Image (cartoon, rainbow, N blue to C red):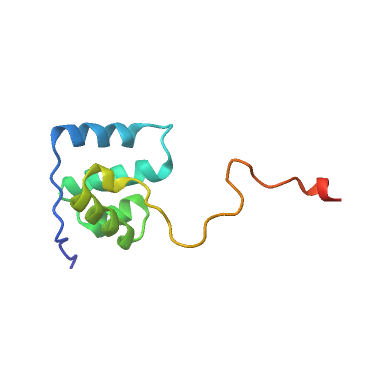
Length: 102
């Protein structure tokens, strides 16, 4: 039997409008689209296990984003800084071509 989440999602009209736009936008990053869909389905009363099955995600990921939305609303869906040592090479610079070292 599926467990009920302690984080019930209720959206304002503005939040629903923003999330629906994110979920439909083809140029958005995949993670933004998935997070928007998770919150929209949660607001519709769908259980975490069912959302996970529909979006082909682990239940823990669905639970994480539901909780973060409930605690921080829309800003909670943004990327957070990651732990660990900073990257030595920026993503924009990329790697040098292999043939240049020969």
